[in-house]
Length: 519
Image 1 (cartoon, rainbow, N blue to C red):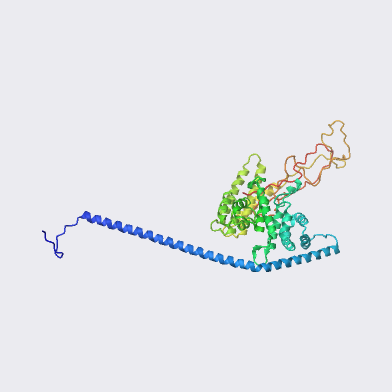
Image 2: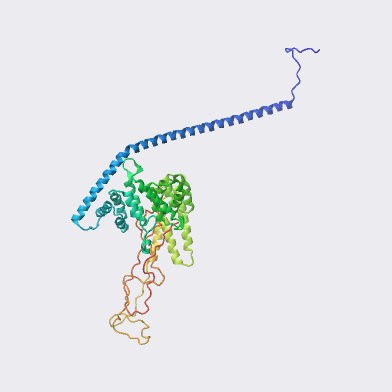
């Protein structure tokens, strides 16, 4: 049997090899790296859990706040119902008394009276509203397109005297919205979308609850249901109009304002609203309407789409409305718009088929772009970032060029005058005609040339003068508006004579209205 070694006795150990030392060193290094990797992993998990926990706490707090606010609003609405009903009843009684007083006054005075100032216009509007005569009210408003500012100020005051303002407005605009019911084609040419938008905008301050504000609209359930039916009818008629791309902008504006006024926006139709707003983005009211329609979260995509379409000025208006100026700086957008406008003007001026007309169109396009940018700079106070002096100089230069082209050429005097009485000579070929008779007295003409209208060759429009600025009917900030052309100056003097081969009055009649489309 072998002896058991004493633990305390020193034993001779074998020397550790260098390879074994390196192996152990590598093992320790691997363990250290693995430990560090695991430590980082668990640290990241802990941080993610902490962030998610904080996010959940924030969401719970937000939900609690929203719940508390909703309960408070519901309680407030419930408490204020009686007060709002009493106010509505009192208002109806006041309207009834005012209507009776007006009838007695009209019977005693007699006649309808004339509307010669803003106060007279308000009295007439109130008379229609008190009597709930929506047809007369509609006709009265639609023939006063030039008095738009006065109507915008007075119509809300008149609608406040109606017994049921929402129903009154729906009946008033029913002639053209949701479907144009006018029979005569000449009447259908006249666009009345401006009047529909005006009445719908004027109705908003009237239907707002006087106690809790815009959170509750004083619209009866029956009228609200009717407004919803009208909106569905308009949407169903889009196919007949040729789709969203072919629908007229005034109709789009009326439809969207109708939704906002009566509070009947649908979440499932947000895609439709987005397409309609982008298609009519040049209207001044569109950014505010877009927010009211619940498109605030889709604004970045809409702004990028407008920029891709070359509507940078419209994109600037949208950015300021929703506070995205940091993400979409306005100055680079305006400079890009001017650059695109110059390129388009250069392409138009290079048209070899119609050099004169092409130069005029190119000049007008660049002027429209400059005016739009200058107005945008002034509206949003961008003078420090984008000095307008060079733009104004360029605009003056273009206007000067246009004025020089307007100057008429000198007309040589007619040398064929009769020496005896300074009267007009007969036509040069009159004596060559068979049985020609030359008299000393001017011949009686069965065709008298007008002294107030110039003659133009057949098929040629009058002088293409730049038309004056039109009144802001729809509140358009972009030069997309339509306005009548300025009349050409009359050519002084006329030469009565025999009706022999008078030139045709080409271009005389109803002027055309070209669209000043700046992008």
